[in-house]
Image (cartoon, rainbow, N blue to C red; front, side, top):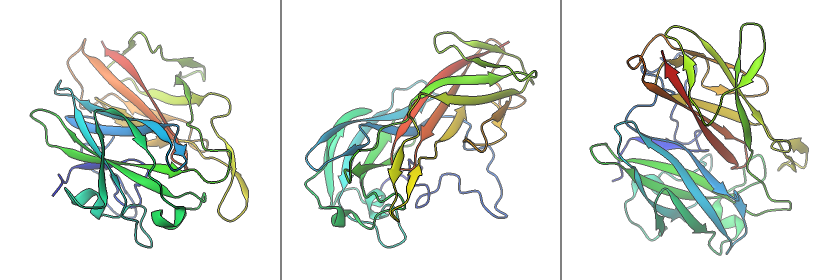
Length: 281
C-alpha cells in the first residue's frame, strides 16, 4: 500500500486535504502550516496536451527538516467511477497494469498516452477529462506521501494555459498595496497581522466553453501556506481577495526566516506557485 499521508492537487473533491464543512472541527495545526514533508502543488507546462504530446510536470515539494524530497511518478489509466475525480486505486496500489511508470524527480517530462477521452471517465463541468499523474514523494527521516495531479487531455482549441502570479501583495492599514520582494526577505514582527493577496498577469483568467455550452471565464483561487502563524482564510479569490497571516503562534525564534507560498489554480488544471521569505524580528 502507499503511505496514507497525502496531498492531492486539483482533486480535493475525491481526496480532501482540508474538506472543512458543516460542523467538522478545524485541524490544529491548520493545513496551511507547513512542517515536515509536504507537497503544496503540482504544475504542468502546458497543463493541457493532446494524446502523444509531452509536458513538463513540477511538484512543489518541501521538507522543513532540511532534506531534499524525491519523487517517483506513474500515470494511472484506471478511469474514475461515477461521482469520482480520481479512482482511489490510483493511490492505493503500489503496482498494477493500469499504473505506468513516468519518471523520477520533482520535475519530469510526461507524455499523454494514446487514449480517447472516453477512456478517462466523464468530463467535468468545464468539459475536460484528465489523466491522473501520481507521485510517491519521500524524504530521509520523513514519512512518504502521495500527490496526484490531473493532466488535461486536449479537447477543443484553444488549450488551457497556466495562470501566472505577478505579485504577492501586502495591504497596509491605510489600504495601500506593496509587492513583497521575491529576492529579499520582508521584515515582520511578532503579533503583527499581515493582509496578503496576489495579482495575476493579464490573460491569466481565460474564457472557454463549458460542458453545458456556455461561455465562461475561469475562476482563479490561491491557496496559502506558511512555516509560521495562521491564516484567516486558506484560499483567496476575486470574491475573497485578502487573507490575514496572524503571527501570534507557531513562531520560530527571532531572526529566523519564515517561508511563505502562494499556489494559484484555475478549474481546468492550470497552476502557478511562488515563494516569498519573511524575516521575524
